[in-house]
Each structure stands twice: as structure tokens, then as C-alpha cells.
Length: 229
Image: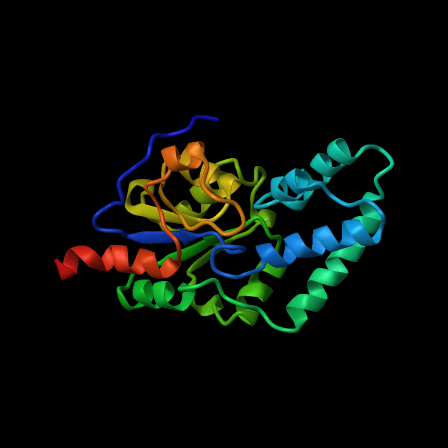
């Protein structure tokens, strides 16, 4: 898969494609804790490097990785059943947004800039999660794992989202938190902003993205800075 060099943010920005989990909604950390706790509960504690490798990756790819890393005796079905139950119970108690999410979404909405989601979560859970978080109405397009043949880190999710928005890739930006997401967006040719959640940017991420920012509020500030002069 070809990797493009860092791209300056387009001016003007005509569309924005957001990742969902870990970027807008604080669900990646909930998954992480559910996987960690479940591994301990079933007597198969997951090493930190395995937990980190699961971030931003779809379920199918994670299942293959777990089977390879943990061995043939790892109770994969039981692990997912119990981890999903723990995750769902946590989400039922309420969803938290990532810092600055309402600010940046309102900024783009009031600027008349269309927005899309490109997520590794399957339908209809992605839409349900956005609705529960009060964010569904912001998005003109939602591309889920169910919509693509090749999920992140392949570029297909971002290419499809841009196509459905009807906007040229060169006029879009992507906002991501994970390594897989950054690889997906940048290999599609999008100027990408990384707002890290669980994993700090490494040398590869820093090389690929247009900016690494502490929060979505900082993205809003960055976009407003030229106008404030």
C-alpha cells in the first residue's frame, strides 16, 4: 500500500472525515479496559503490546491477531463474549465525548462544511453509538466496516467517504487518533490531523500527518488562527 508524504491542510477545506472511536467518542479506552479486564478474568491476561495492537483495528483483524499472538488454546469466543458484555454495560451507563468534540463539530457545521464518519465499527452499532452520543445529526455520510471490503488501514473507507460526500480528496481533511486510521487516511491521499488517544504518535505517524494536536479544541484553534491573524 503506497504511503503519501505529509500534505498541507487544504485552503479552503471543503469536507472533513472523522474517525469515530477514540477520536470523537471516548470508546477506544472503554474497549481497551474491557479487553484487559476480560483477559484477567478468564485467566489469559493480555500483554500490553497485544492490547495496544488492537487499537483502531476491526474485529476480524483483531481476532486473527489474538489467535496468532495468544496461541491455539486461547478461548477467543469466550473472550469476545465477556469483553463485549463488559463494554456494552459500560456504554449503557453513558458515553463520553473526546475533549473538544462539540467545539470542532459546531465549528464545521456553522462554517457549512460537510462532515463524514469513517469507522471500523460495523452498522448499525456505529449509527447507534453516534446517536447515543448526540452526534448523529452532524454527519452527511457514515461509512462503517459494513460498507467496505477492505477496512482500515486500507484506504477504502476514506476513499468511499469522500466519494459519497462528492468532494475531491485534495479538498478534504481526515481526523484520526490511531495508527491504523492515520495509515488509512494518508494512503487515500488526505491531509490528516492526528489527535492521539491511547497511543502516542511514533516517528512514522509524525512523518505521515499534517499535524499532531493534543485535542480537537486545538484543531479548532489552528483553523481559526489565520483569520485571527
